Amino acid sequence: MLQQVPLFQHLSTEGFLDLAQLVQEEEYGPGKTICKTGEYGDTLYAVVEGAVGVRRDGREIANLGKGEYFGEMAIIDSGPRSADCVAITRASLLALRKEQLQAFCFRDAQVLRGMMRVLSERLQGIA
Ligand code: CMP
Image (cartoon, rainbow, N blue to C red; front, top):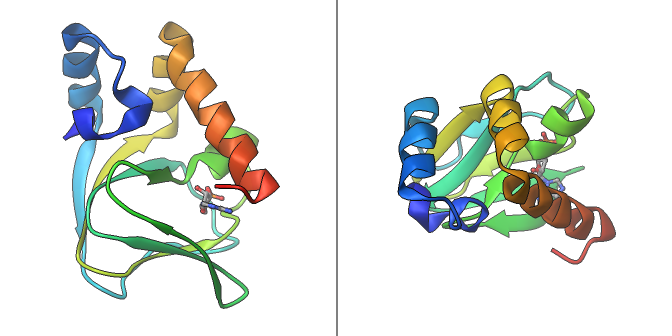
């Protein structure tokens, strides 16, 4: 499952095995809210199967599918969630908590660089 997420695709077998110990699988039915705007959140989610809509002020600003992730902004700025993330179809996700993601970024700068690039694209509105 982790190998389907581009953010982690460069990892060695050892890296995958380490990361696999840290993530948890979560399932959400269609219409279920995963993140709510303004709420505190400390989890990054990667989409393994299904689709997740990112909504702000009732408008869908992104539709995330297999291999994409969300929830990084609240982890980076320690602020509240910047958007609602809602399962559009049944969604199978991998969840990674802030402390674990940060620890992983310290040992693997490529994960950090990948997250920064996607963050920049999202903030510019080009992702
Ligand atoms: P966070 O703010 O923690 O929670 C809501 C998430 O929606 C946010 O992290 C991003 O992962 C995601 N998100 C916000 N804006 C965009 C965007 N323009 N494109 C894709 N995803 C976004």
